[in-house]
Amino acid sequence: MSAPMPAASAAIIGGVLPLHLPGRPAAPHSVEGLWRRAGRSWSTYRSARGAFVDLLARLGPRTVWLPAYLCTTLADAARAVAGQLRFYPLDGQLEPDVEALTAAPGDVVLVVHYFGRPPGAGLRALAAARPDIVWVEDRAQALDPAVPPFGDVLLYSPRELLGVPDGGVLVGVRHAFGGSSGAPGPEAAELARPLLLRLEAEEHNDLWYGAYRASEAAMPSGPAPMSRLTEALLARIDVEPVARARRDNYARLHAALADLALFPDPEPAWVPLGLPVRVVDAAALARRLALRRVFCARHWGELPSDADAFAREHRLARELLTLPCDQRYGAADMDRLARMVRERAR
Ligand SMILES: Cc1ncc(COP(=O)(O)O)c(C=O)c1O
Image 1 (cartoon, rainbow, N blue to C red):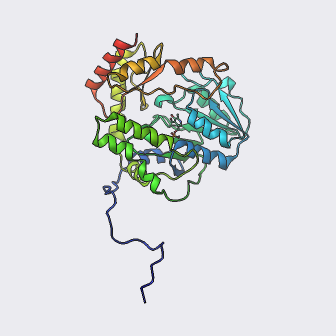
Image 2: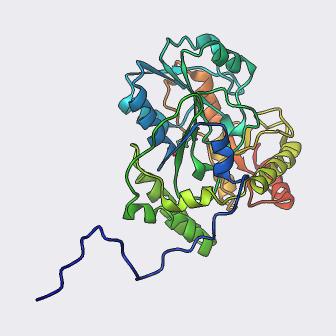
Image 3: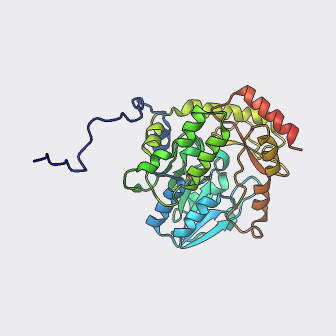
Protein backbone atom coordinates (compact mmCIF):
# COMPACT_ATOMS: atom_id res chain seq x y z
CA MET A 1 0.00 0.00 0.00
CA SER A 2 1.45 3.45 -0.93
CA ALA A 3 1.84 6.19 1.70
CA PRO A 4 -0.98 8.77 1.69
CA MET A 5 -0.13 12.05 -0.08
CA PRO A 6 0.07 14.98 2.33
CA ALA A 7 -2.64 17.59 2.06
CA ALA A 8 -1.78 20.27 -0.51
CA SER A 9 -1.95 22.87 2.26
CA ALA A 10 0.80 21.25 4.35
CA ALA A 11 3.88 23.47 4.58
CA ILE A 12 6.68 22.55 2.16
CA ILE A 13 9.99 21.50 3.66
CA GLY A 14 13.15 21.61 1.54
CA GLY A 15 13.64 22.43 -2.12
CA VAL A 16 15.11 25.50 -3.83
CA LEU A 17 15.97 28.46 -1.60
CA PRO A 18 13.96 31.63 -2.18
CA LEU A 19 15.59 35.04 -2.67
CA HIS A 20 17.51 35.82 0.51
CA LEU A 21 16.54 39.13 2.03
CA PRO A 22 18.77 40.56 4.73
CA GLY A 23 17.20 40.76 8.18
CA ARG A 24 14.79 43.55 8.81
CA PRO A 25 16.79 46.23 10.60
CA ALA A 26 15.38 48.15 13.53
CA ALA A 27 14.78 50.96 11.07
CA PRO A 28 12.77 53.80 12.46
CA HIS A 29 13.81 55.56 9.26
CA SER A 30 12.65 52.98 6.75
CA VAL A 31 10.22 54.07 4.05
CA GLU A 32 7.52 51.99 5.71
CA GLY A 33 8.35 53.54 9.09
CA LEU A 34 8.05 57.07 7.69
CA TRP A 35 4.81 56.45 5.83
CA ARG A 36 3.19 54.51 8.68
CA ARG A 37 3.98 57.14 11.29
CA ALA A 38 1.23 59.49 10.15
CA GLY A 39 -1.60 56.98 10.35
CA ARG A 40 -3.65 54.43 12.18
CA SER A 41 -3.77 51.78 9.50
CA TRP A 42 -1.41 50.52 6.79
CA SER A 43 -2.97 48.64 3.88
CA THR A 44 -0.95 47.33 0.98
CA TYR A 45 -1.90 46.66 -2.65
CA ARG A 46 -0.25 45.98 -5.99
CA SER A 47 -0.77 49.53 -7.27
CA ALA A 48 -2.05 52.90 -6.12
CA ARG A 49 -4.98 52.66 -8.53
CA GLY A 50 -5.97 49.34 -6.93
CA ALA A 51 -5.74 50.92 -3.48
CA PHE A 52 -7.90 53.86 -4.58
CA VAL A 53 -10.49 51.57 -6.15
CA ASP A 54 -10.70 49.57 -2.91
CA LEU A 55 -11.12 52.77 -0.88
CA LEU A 56 -13.93 53.99 -3.16
CA ALA A 57 -15.67 50.61 -3.02
CA ARG A 58 -15.60 50.75 0.79
CA LEU A 59 -16.79 54.37 1.05
CA GLY A 60 -19.29 54.39 -1.83
CA PRO A 61 -19.32 58.20 -2.26
CA ARG A 62 -21.88 59.88 -4.49
CA THR A 63 -19.21 62.02 -6.19
CA VAL A 64 -15.44 61.66 -6.54
CA TRP A 65 -13.51 64.87 -7.30
CA LEU A 66 -10.26 64.51 -9.23
CA PRO A 67 -7.82 67.22 -10.31
CA ALA A 68 -8.06 68.01 -14.03
CA TYR A 69 -4.29 67.44 -14.16
CA LEU A 70 -3.87 63.70 -13.46
CA CYS A 71 -2.69 60.44 -15.01
CA THR A 72 -5.37 58.65 -17.01
CA THR A 73 -4.75 55.31 -15.25
CA LEU A 74 -6.03 56.55 -11.89
CA ALA A 75 -9.04 58.32 -13.41
CA ASP A 76 -9.97 55.26 -15.51
CA ALA A 77 -9.76 52.98 -12.47
CA ALA A 78 -11.89 55.39 -10.40
CA ARG A 79 -14.45 55.78 -13.19
CA ALA A 80 -15.16 52.05 -13.06
CA VAL A 81 -16.32 52.20 -9.41
CA ALA A 82 -17.27 55.82 -8.66
CA GLY A 83 -20.87 57.02 -8.79
CA GLN A 84 -20.00 60.31 -10.45
CA LEU A 85 -16.58 61.72 -11.38
CA ARG A 86 -15.94 65.46 -11.42
CA PHE A 87 -12.75 67.28 -12.29
CA TYR A 88 -11.57 70.49 -10.61
CA PRO A 89 -9.18 73.08 -12.11
CA LEU A 90 -5.66 74.08 -11.01
CA ASP A 91 -3.53 77.15 -11.54
CA GLY A 92 -0.30 77.42 -13.56
CA GLN A 93 1.70 75.95 -10.68
CA LEU A 94 -0.74 73.11 -10.11
CA GLU A 95 -2.39 74.60 -7.01
CA PRO A 96 -6.05 73.52 -6.75
CA ASP A 97 -8.65 76.20 -7.46
CA VAL A 98 -10.47 75.99 -4.11
CA GLU A 99 -13.39 78.14 -5.32
CA ALA A 100 -14.27 75.45 -7.85
CA LEU A 101 -14.21 72.66 -5.27
CA THR A 102 -17.89 72.72 -4.35
CA ALA A 103 -17.99 69.22 -2.89
CA ALA A 104 -20.96 67.96 -0.86
CA PRO A 105 -20.74 66.13 2.48
CA GLY A 106 -19.54 62.57 1.96
CA ASP A 107 -17.82 63.30 -1.37
CA VAL A 108 -14.26 62.09 -1.88
CA VAL A 109 -11.69 64.68 -3.04
CA LEU A 110 -8.29 63.54 -4.34
CA VAL A 111 -5.47 66.07 -3.97
CA VAL A 112 -2.11 65.37 -5.63
CA HIS A 113 1.31 66.33 -4.26
CA TYR A 114 2.67 67.13 -7.74
CA PHE A 115 6.31 66.20 -8.19
CA GLY A 116 6.51 65.81 -4.38
CA ARG A 117 5.37 69.35 -3.52
CA PRO A 118 2.53 69.59 -1.00
CA PRO A 119 -0.49 71.74 -1.86
CA GLY A 120 -0.52 75.27 -0.43
CA ALA A 121 -2.33 77.09 2.36
CA GLY A 122 -5.60 77.62 0.44
CA LEU A 123 -6.27 73.94 -0.01
CA ARG A 124 -5.17 73.07 3.52
CA ALA A 125 -7.53 75.71 4.95
CA LEU A 126 -10.42 74.29 2.92
CA ALA A 127 -9.62 70.75 4.12
CA ALA A 128 -9.58 71.96 7.74
CA ALA A 129 -12.90 73.77 7.26
CA ARG A 130 -14.61 70.79 5.60
CA PRO A 131 -14.20 67.66 7.76
CA ASP A 132 -17.43 66.38 6.18
CA ILE A 133 -15.47 65.60 2.98
CA VAL A 134 -13.13 62.61 2.65
CA TRP A 135 -9.77 64.10 1.66
CA VAL A 136 -7.36 61.70 -0.06
CA GLU A 137 -3.76 62.89 -0.33
CA ASP A 138 -2.24 61.35 -3.45
CA ARG A 139 1.42 60.99 -2.52
CA ALA A 140 2.36 58.77 -5.45
CA GLN A 141 5.08 61.31 -6.33
CA ALA A 142 5.85 62.34 -2.74
CA LEU A 143 8.30 60.35 -0.63
CA ASP A 144 8.08 62.96 2.14
CA PRO A 145 6.20 66.26 1.79
CA ALA A 146 7.77 67.46 5.07
CA VAL A 147 4.46 68.83 6.38
CA PRO A 148 1.82 67.12 8.53
CA PRO A 149 -1.01 65.39 6.67
CA PHE A 150 -4.23 67.29 6.04
CA GLY A 151 -6.06 64.30 4.55
CA ASP A 152 -8.10 61.45 5.94
CA VAL A 153 -6.20 58.95 3.81
CA LEU A 154 -2.72 58.95 2.24
CA LEU A 155 -2.14 57.11 -1.03
CA TYR A 156 1.34 55.98 -2.12
CA SER A 157 2.79 54.28 -5.21
CA PRO A 158 6.31 53.21 -4.13
CA ARG A 159 7.61 52.17 -7.56
CA GLU A 160 7.35 55.79 -8.75
CA LEU A 161 10.09 56.72 -6.28
CA LEU A 162 12.10 53.60 -5.45
CA GLY A 163 13.45 50.55 -7.27
CA VAL A 164 10.71 48.20 -6.08
CA PRO A 165 8.59 46.00 -8.35
CA ASP A 166 5.09 47.20 -7.56
CA GLY A 167 2.94 48.60 -4.82
CA GLY A 168 0.16 50.81 -3.63
CA VAL A 169 -0.37 51.82 -0.01
CA LEU A 170 -3.29 53.36 1.85
CA VAL A 171 -2.51 54.95 5.19
CA GLY A 172 -5.65 55.75 7.18
CA VAL A 173 -5.12 58.97 9.14
CA ARG A 174 -8.49 59.73 10.68
CA HIS A 175 -9.93 56.26 10.22
CA ALA A 176 -8.46 52.80 9.88
CA PHE A 177 -9.05 50.90 6.63
CA GLY A 178 -8.72 47.23 5.76
CA GLY A 179 -6.26 46.03 3.14
CA SER A 180 -6.33 43.78 0.10
CA SER A 181 -6.80 40.15 0.99
CA GLY A 182 -5.16 37.08 -0.45
CA ALA A 183 -1.55 36.12 -1.12
CA PRO A 184 0.35 37.26 -4.20
CA GLY A 185 0.58 34.52 -6.86
CA PRO A 186 3.17 33.55 -9.49
CA GLU A 187 2.41 36.70 -11.51
CA ALA A 188 3.87 38.78 -8.64
CA ALA A 189 7.28 37.18 -9.33
CA GLU A 190 7.23 38.52 -12.90
CA LEU A 191 6.92 42.10 -11.61
CA ALA A 192 10.58 42.14 -10.61
CA ARG A 193 11.75 41.33 -14.16
CA PRO A 194 12.26 44.93 -15.42
CA LEU A 195 14.27 45.83 -12.31
CA LEU A 196 16.44 42.72 -12.53
CA LEU A 197 17.08 43.32 -16.23
CA ARG A 198 18.16 46.86 -15.52
CA LEU A 199 20.36 45.69 -12.63
CA GLU A 200 22.11 43.00 -14.65
CA ALA A 201 22.04 44.55 -18.14
CA GLU A 202 22.07 48.35 -17.79
CA GLU A 203 23.19 48.88 -21.40
CA HIS A 204 20.24 46.94 -22.84
CA ASN A 205 17.64 49.66 -22.45
CA ASP A 206 15.46 48.04 -25.12
CA LEU A 207 15.19 44.95 -22.89
CA TRP A 208 14.42 46.57 -19.53
CA TYR A 209 12.18 49.24 -21.00
CA GLY A 210 10.24 46.61 -22.97
CA ALA A 211 9.83 44.51 -19.83
CA TYR A 212 8.72 47.58 -17.87
CA ARG A 213 6.07 48.44 -20.49
CA ALA A 214 4.79 44.87 -20.47
CA SER A 215 4.67 44.80 -16.68
CA GLU A 216 2.77 48.11 -16.50
CA ALA A 217 0.33 46.99 -19.20
CA ALA A 218 -0.43 43.86 -17.17
CA MET A 219 -1.00 45.81 -13.93
CA PRO A 220 -4.52 45.01 -12.67
CA SER A 221 -6.72 48.07 -12.14
CA GLY A 222 -8.52 46.50 -9.17
CA PRO A 223 -7.20 45.64 -5.71
CA ALA A 224 -4.56 42.90 -5.75
CA PRO A 225 -1.95 42.18 -3.07
CA MET A 226 1.48 43.80 -3.03
CA SER A 227 4.39 41.49 -3.86
CA ARG A 228 6.31 40.11 -0.89
CA LEU A 229 9.49 41.57 -2.35
CA THR A 230 8.12 45.12 -2.27
CA GLU A 231 6.76 44.60 1.26
CA ALA A 232 10.22 43.48 2.36
CA LEU A 233 12.07 46.31 0.62
CA LEU A 234 9.85 49.07 1.99
CA ALA A 235 10.68 47.87 5.50
CA ARG A 236 14.42 47.88 4.71
CA ILE A 237 15.14 50.92 2.53
CA ASP A 238 16.61 53.78 4.57
CA VAL A 239 14.67 56.86 3.59
CA GLU A 240 17.29 59.42 4.57
CA PRO A 241 19.96 58.94 1.85
CA VAL A 242 17.21 58.76 -0.79
CA ALA A 243 15.63 62.00 0.42
CA ARG A 244 18.97 63.80 0.71
CA ALA A 245 20.12 62.84 -2.79
CA ARG A 246 16.82 63.92 -4.32
CA ARG A 247 16.87 67.30 -2.57
CA ASP A 248 20.54 67.99 -3.35
CA ASN A 249 20.18 67.02 -7.00
CA TYR A 250 17.01 69.06 -7.38
CA ALA A 251 18.70 72.16 -5.88
CA ARG A 252 21.63 71.81 -8.29
CA LEU A 253 19.38 71.40 -11.33
CA HIS A 254 17.14 74.24 -10.19
CA ALA A 255 20.10 76.60 -9.82
CA ALA A 256 21.12 75.86 -13.42
CA LEU A 257 17.62 75.94 -14.96
CA ALA A 258 15.62 78.28 -12.68
CA ASP A 259 14.09 80.11 -15.66
CA LEU A 260 12.55 76.84 -16.92
CA ALA A 261 11.55 75.35 -13.54
CA LEU A 262 7.82 75.01 -12.87
CA PHE A 263 8.17 75.70 -9.15
CA PRO A 264 10.02 78.65 -7.61
CA ASP A 265 11.37 76.57 -4.66
CA PRO A 266 15.19 76.49 -5.07
CA GLU A 267 15.87 74.21 -2.07
CA PRO A 268 12.67 72.46 -1.05
CA ALA A 269 12.09 70.85 2.34
CA TRP A 270 9.85 68.34 0.53
CA VAL A 271 11.43 65.48 -1.40
CA PRO A 272 11.14 65.95 -5.16
CA LEU A 273 10.16 63.33 -7.72
CA GLY A 274 12.16 65.21 -10.35
CA LEU A 275 12.56 68.78 -11.58
CA PRO A 276 9.57 69.68 -13.75
CA VAL A 277 10.60 72.15 -16.46
CA ARG A 278 8.24 74.08 -18.68
CA VAL A 279 9.22 74.23 -22.35
CA VAL A 280 7.39 74.93 -25.60
CA ASP A 281 7.14 71.30 -26.65
CA ALA A 282 7.93 68.69 -23.99
CA ALA A 283 7.49 65.75 -26.38
CA ALA A 284 10.05 67.20 -28.83
CA LEU A 285 12.59 67.90 -26.06
CA ALA A 286 12.09 64.38 -24.67
CA ARG A 287 12.82 62.96 -28.16
CA ARG A 288 15.97 65.08 -28.58
CA LEU A 289 17.28 64.02 -25.17
CA ALA A 290 16.44 60.35 -25.79
CA LEU A 291 18.73 60.42 -28.85
CA ARG A 292 21.54 60.98 -26.33
CA ARG A 293 20.16 58.23 -24.07
CA VAL A 294 18.77 60.71 -21.56
CA PHE A 295 15.29 59.50 -20.66
CA CYS A 296 12.83 61.96 -19.13
CA ALA A 297 9.23 61.16 -18.19
CA ARG A 298 6.21 63.28 -19.01
CA HIS A 299 3.71 63.64 -16.21
CA TRP A 300 1.52 63.42 -18.18
CA GLY A 301 1.30 63.38 -21.96
CA GLU A 302 -2.42 62.65 -21.75
CA LEU A 303 -4.99 63.90 -19.26
CA PRO A 304 -8.37 62.34 -18.44
CA SER A 305 -10.18 65.71 -18.24
CA ASP A 306 -11.94 67.51 -21.08
CA ALA A 307 -9.45 69.49 -23.23
CA ASP A 308 -11.82 72.41 -23.88
CA ALA A 309 -13.08 72.80 -20.31
CA PHE A 310 -9.53 72.52 -18.90
CA ALA A 311 -7.42 74.23 -21.57
CA ARG A 312 -4.78 75.54 -19.09
CA GLU A 313 -4.14 72.06 -17.68
CA HIS A 314 -3.87 70.53 -21.17
CA ARG A 315 -1.42 73.22 -22.21
CA LEU A 316 0.71 72.42 -19.15
CA ALA A 317 0.61 68.75 -20.12
CA ARG A 318 2.17 69.65 -23.48
CA GLU A 319 4.83 71.83 -21.83
CA LEU A 320 6.03 69.89 -18.76
CA LEU A 321 8.98 67.53 -18.80
CA THR A 322 10.29 65.84 -15.64
CA LEU A 323 14.08 65.83 -15.34
CA PRO A 324 15.38 62.96 -13.18
CA CYS A 325 17.17 63.97 -9.95
CA ASP A 326 16.89 60.78 -7.96
CA GLN A 327 19.16 58.79 -5.65
CA ARG A 328 21.16 57.26 -8.51
CA TYR A 329 22.75 60.59 -9.35
CA GLY A 330 25.19 63.17 -8.07
CA ALA A 331 26.34 66.70 -8.87
CA ALA A 332 28.30 65.81 -12.04
CA ASP A 333 25.28 64.02 -13.53
CA MET A 334 23.04 66.99 -12.77
CA ASP A 335 25.50 69.42 -14.39
CA ARG A 336 25.60 67.28 -17.53
CA LEU A 337 21.82 66.97 -17.61
CA ALA A 338 21.33 70.73 -17.15
CA ARG A 339 23.78 71.43 -20.01
CA MET A 340 22.02 69.03 -22.34
CA VAL A 341 18.61 70.48 -21.54
CA ARG A 342 19.88 74.05 -21.96
CA GLU A 343 21.32 73.23 -25.39
CA ARG A 344 18.16 71.48 -26.61
CA ALA A 345 15.32 73.39 -24.95
CA ARG A 346 15.15 76.21 -27.51
C1 LIG B 1 -0.09 61.18 -8.94
C2 LIG B 1 -0.33 59.74 -9.26
N1 LIG B 1 -1.37 59.11 -8.69
C3 LIG B 1 -1.61 57.80 -8.92
C4 LIG B 1 -0.84 57.07 -9.79
C5 LIG B 1 -1.18 55.63 -10.07
O1 LIG B 1 -0.23 54.80 -9.46
P1 LIG B 1 -0.20 53.26 -9.83
O2 LIG B 1 0.50 53.15 -11.17
O3 LIG B 1 0.59 52.62 -8.72
O4 LIG B 1 -1.59 52.78 -9.90
C6 LIG B 1 0.25 57.68 -10.40
C7 LIG B 1 1.08 56.91 -11.35
O5 LIG B 1 1.47 57.40 -12.38
C8 LIG B 1 0.52 59.05 -10.13
O6 LIG B 1 1.56 59.67 -10.69
